[in-house]
Structure formats: structure tokens, C-alpha cells
Length: 379
Image (cartoon, rainbow, N blue to C red; front, top):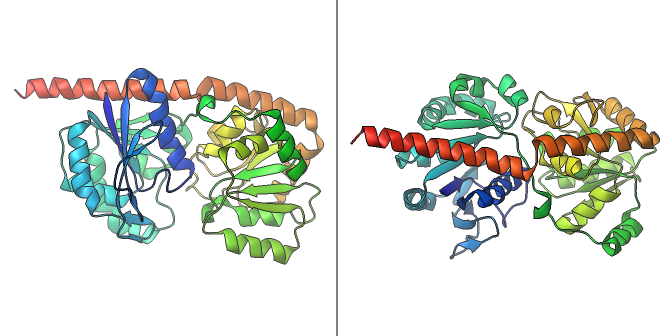
């Protein structure tokens, strides 16, 4: 079975949670006979397809970006070409330019849309975009919500509820590097241990400004791994607050990330807006048997992290609640370890790569079968 994924960013150009979500879908459907290709836009596109372990990646020139919506006119013709190759077309929301491309390039191939997040920040533009979005969603055969929590709280998903199935994101431990004791010892010398860890792109909805406020007067230490548009502003805030217990690590390799996950006390994801629909970093924490601290924003973060079981869930936007949660897990090692064990158990039950791959294979096969039935009826 051949599947085309279409989204505005992908490896190796960018490294975020949504890119990792697509990578894991591609990787974990390979054992079920799925061959994937990814079409994306790039400021400096590769002339030839990029061969990655999970998929062949096609890049077309990005001509601009408006309100976080990347536009690449070459994607229209390339999408038409790759759609002809594919058995199933897999789109990823939100990206309004994909709506335009799909409507300009109608296809009889079955389609699935993974709904990663509501459009939150561009609320005014969302109203302008609504008629196009309605046509786009009507053209999709199946819509995937990544958690029951997000489905329950999303008016857009509720509007197409009859098409929606829930498939949580998942990750495969084997897709991450195995870290030797020597490397862990090196990271321990550099960063210590029992610190709290944030990993991710430094974006506006991640709530890192709230987390920095929570670190004022804290007895805990925090490492922030990642880069992004908020980086300079956050560093200025940390300097203004005089935070000697916070370190910005910038970009870290997957090997360093895995070492940091092993050494940390817990992973903190302070995201305070619904743009954080799931939080792949929480899956990575659970995979590594680490407790989590997250905020209640009515999304998949509270599907991964169950309060009092796999970690602590606090009031969104509240620096005092974040600080108290960190102090609690920092002081109670046994509770942190117990929650970490429960987090790993939940990962194995719901979020493993194998489960993810099997769920999508089943969805793809069902769409393909239905499409063949309809095609036969039309003859």
C-alpha cells in the first residue's frame, strides 16, 4: 500500500512534535506493508527526493508565509503527480494551503486527515477561512483525532463527528538512539541529575514564560532543550528574573535528548493554550519511565498524563501551581519513581509504535477497500 503525506514542514528542515508524529506514522506502518512519501515545502528545497528511513521526502520551493501558513506554488503540480502514485492520501491539519491544493487537484484516491490542532491564534482569519475549510473537510473520507479529549473540546471536529475516529499518537523506542553509559556519564557531569526538563520548539503556546516565573525562588533546577521564535525573549526574561537555576541548551541531538530524559527527575510541559494538542515530549517521557507535569487545557496532554497516576496536572497559566508541582516531585523521589513506572505502563498500553502502526494500517485498508467497492459500483 502506498501513502502520500502532505504537510507544510518536515525533516530535515524542521524538528518539532508534528514532524515527529508524521515520522512515527510512516515508520510504524512499514512492518504492515505501507510505503510512504512525504510532500512538503522548503525555503531551500532539495533538487532530488530525500531518502529517510521512514519515507522518501519531496520538497518544493516555499514562496512565502502568511499567518504561519506556508505557501509553495510548486506543490500543486507535485501533489497531483504524487497523488496519482498513492493508494491513500494522508493530510495533516492545520495548513490552509493544503485545502487549496486539494481542491485544485481533485482525486479519486481515498483520503484521511489527521487533525493535530485547532486554529487558535488566528481567530479572525479563521472566520474568513471557514467556508474553504468546510469544503475541504467535506472532501475528506476520514478524520483522525489524536485523543478523545481533543475531540470533545473541538467545535471543528464536532462538526464532522460522523467521520472522526480516535488514534492516539505513538512512538517506537527503537526509532530513538540507544545511549551508552559513557554518554550518560558525560551528560551527568555537564548537567547534573534530578533536574526538570523541557524539550520542544520554543513557541508562544508552550507557556515557557509561565514556567520561568515559576522558577523564581525555586529550589529545583530546569533545563530547556530546544530552539524557536520565543528563544531570545525567554532568555531576556530569565536574565531579568535572575534565574541561576535555569539553563537554555539550544538544539540537542536525539542522543543527548535520550540521555537527558534518563537523568531528569520529570518532564515539564507548561503549554497553556489548545495549540498544544498532544505533546510528543510527554510520550517520550512516558516511554522513558519519567513522570510528567502538564497543564489542564482540555487536550491530549491530559490523555497522556493522568493526574496523580503518571504525573501532575496543574491549572493552566498558573506559575504557583507549576512551582508547587515541581517542589512536590523534587522532594518525593519515591512518588516520582512510582508515577514514572505508571507512565511507562500507560505508554506500552496505548502509545507504542506498534499500536500506532496497526491502527493506521487498519484505517488505510478500510478506506482502500471502501474506495474499491465504490469504484466497482460505478462501472
